[in-house]
Image 1 (cartoon, one colour):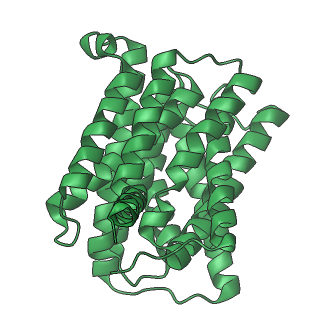
Image 2 (cartoon, one colour):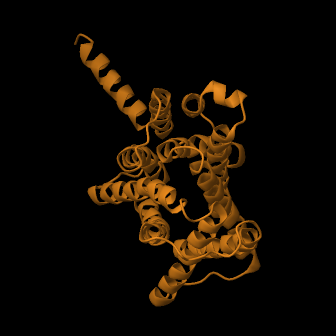
Image 3 (cartoon, one colour):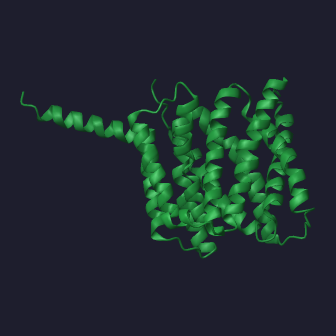
Amino acid sequence: MKQQQLNSRAWLEMLTLGAIWGGVFLAVALALKEIPVFCLVTMRVGFAAVVLWIYILVRKHQIPRGWKVWSAVIVMGILNNAVPFTLLNFGQTQIASGLTSILNAGTVVFATLISAMFLKDERLTPRKLVGVILGMSGVVTVIGVQALQTFDLRSLGQIACIGATFSYALAGVWARKHLSGVSPAASSAGMLTDSAQVMAPITLWIDGWPTWAYSGQTWLSLIYIVIIATVIAYLLYFRVLNSAGASNTLLVTLVVPPIAVTLGAFVLAEQLPLRSLLGFALIATALAVIDGRLWKLAHRTFSTARGSAIPR
């Protein structure tokens, strides 16, 4: 099957999406100064769900019916929102926001591995296996071998981020198997609503009622997280997905970490060790290998050069 191409509009939309998600790590880091971990997750999914339902009603989108669809949406809400948002938020209380974004880039590596296990049309080819090995090496490099041997809060924060990427990967496989053909806006609103229902009682039990007495910076961060990084980002994500295809959309994971690292350095004065940047380079290489286009380009170039060198 021919791979879909990225036209100029799709490139612009994908880069915009990468910039939005690159900025969310800074916004979360700022919001977590005043809002507890579970409370921030509940606010994010709850407020975003309300905004999306308003959008659906105004645009008169068709709302899917049937217990089978909505039971799948509940699972999606847990795997794609409740679990990873909570783990990433906890991770950011222990490690730098830029480091969190780098670890989050490993999602595609786990998705490739899990998809090969559960989806018949996503088999693990030798090229993808090389990509997975490179990606895993990059993740281990970012964390550091020593951190895997000691379980302090920083180590737990990094492991929590890895858990989030694993949950995202499971969510991708679940969506392909159970939510194909469902309206993106409706499925997004549904999973956010369900994850809010899951998170609300946990939040009340652990964090209690929110105080709402936040600084202007926290409110601005919360608005960015809810409106821009969740509502607009989801709608833009599905637009890019539909126009450019899944493999092209995966490239957004290469855009997010450089932006998050740069914002963390300038705004929060974060400094990442050299191994973090080396690990990201390995993960980026892994994504390029999994995507396959650079490999095919190199193969065509080599074949052309070899053919032209043959005496006529």
